[in-house]
Image (cartoon, rainbow, N blue to C red):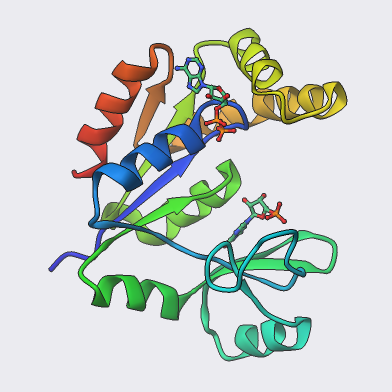
Length: 184
Ligand code: ADP
Ligand code: 5GP
């Protein structure tokens, strides 16, 4: 059996959560890869659900053991990475791995998995539409929205490194296209 993975990345506000949640409810064979992190859990987060929470020492030990497919120091002193054991767990269940990661992470994973990965970049029709969606979502302050929009402009430059670009204009159309891509 070919060990396939699907990677979804997008600038914040493009609709990545909407698309990934839809696919997860539609296709039971897809399973989200849970990353490990050395940061502490926030709010209702549970070990094994949002992340595998490791102490900095445990994380360093796993780095030394070559236990990660990839890892990064995303924030100073805070490490995040994908454990090889997580991939083995999902493949052993006969499932397809779905990565829901930021744009840089998506580029890294595509480099690692090559032809075994389908990397999809989700893009809003324009930066203006993206800003409007973030405002409407109502989860971010005006400053946070502007910093996400500025970051989106940088991230869009990475889109050509992905296998497919999915423009999220009309939502129903986008979800149908995502379904066709996910079970490739
Ligand atoms: P992301 O996970 O990429 O940050 P979300 O999935 O949270 O983005 O989508 C951002 C906001 O835009 C949400 O409020 C979502 O309901 C809305 N949204 C997503 N797709 C569309 C669409 N095609 N048209 C209009 N609104 C959308
Ligand atoms: P959080 O808000 O959960 O603390 O941080 C999320 C950040 O860590 C995002 O930028 C996300 O893309 C990144 N991240 C989460 N998991 C991984 C991973 O496995 N590898 C890498 N390189 N980054 C990750």
